[in-house]
Length: 239
Image (cartoon, rainbow, N blue to C red; front, side, top):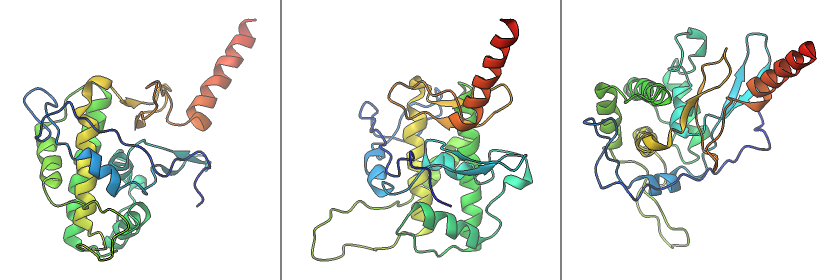
């Protein structure tokens, strides 16, 4: 399925130099973040964010969650509806990772899938908490920190004459990269960039990457337009 023209496939992820070295803290919500976010950005630079969703009426629409880790959460952990589940087998996870990490090696074991689902659940719950102005549960902080502590994708400067390290990305490295990205985004708690769609009948959570930090809708083509139509009809009815 072709991506919408407006989708930025190389999203900029901001560094947070104001935080000291450390990991996602528990003592006062989110206290510290490592300085990993800069090179995590480089390692996931080619990964697009967003995916196609299908409404109950069969309409297909594009939802950009605003972050790779939140996209991952939307493979099944952001809803209790079994129909949302996309990762039924290791091959499903391999396909998803290959779409987001061009250098993914496509090798996923049953153990990798179990690990991925554990991380995915923690990412989903943490993002939902952040969208409500709440701190993530300590158990989810522990899970995210655990995955972030494992080796992720090493940055590489182009133009050399020899290969340094592996040229392919392992599943564990991809999971670590997403955990580290989530730490960087969750740590910016004062910015309140995790939000729920403003529509009354939609609870989709997104990370607002706009410069003005004023995104309101899961998608302007869906909830944004529906709200505009409703408001227009209401104004005509009272005119």
